[in-house]
Image (cartoon, rainbow, N blue to C red; front, side, top):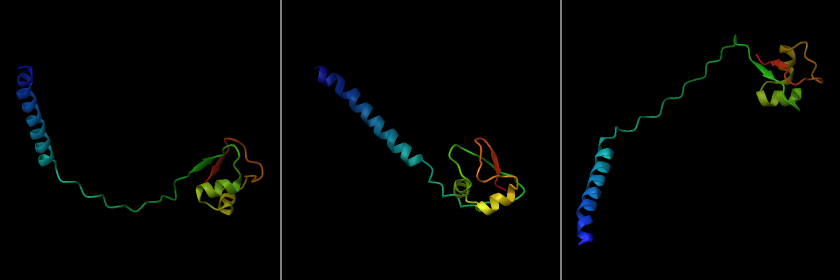
Length: 93
């Protein structure tokens, strides 16, 4: 008797669950198309800096930022490439 007492509510719950799942998949909107990639806009007027970390050399900063050491020296005329200090700001642009 206890099995039949719980059989109908369990069957009803299963049927409602399946119906909700089917309705949810049917009502979902179609997937959005992937956004078109935009070209990066570089503003040369924007000044950027790099903070020197422990163990950094001018060559390491150049490699990490993608800017040549020659360009870094040109942007930072007072920079001593053999004596970089922690927290020192190096101009990148």
